[in-house]
Image (cartoon, rainbow, N blue to C red; front, side, top):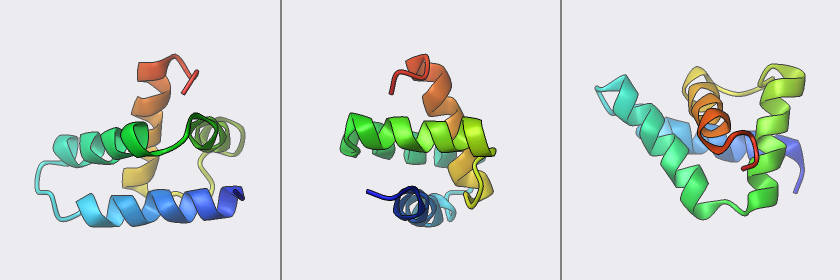
Length: 77
């Protein structure tokens, strides 16, 4: 799967959670969705996009969630 498609998917998930008034809960929602439903290789690619390309193309909410995902997994995804 292309990184462009993964970024689009992450942004779509973030858009869903954007209506959550509690930003912390919104970030956690995006992070947890990606952790639960994305294949490990997809998570590795999106974390690499964050680290190598500063999350180019990611919304702020998606970027925050991927940062937490990377930290909580030790970047192993």
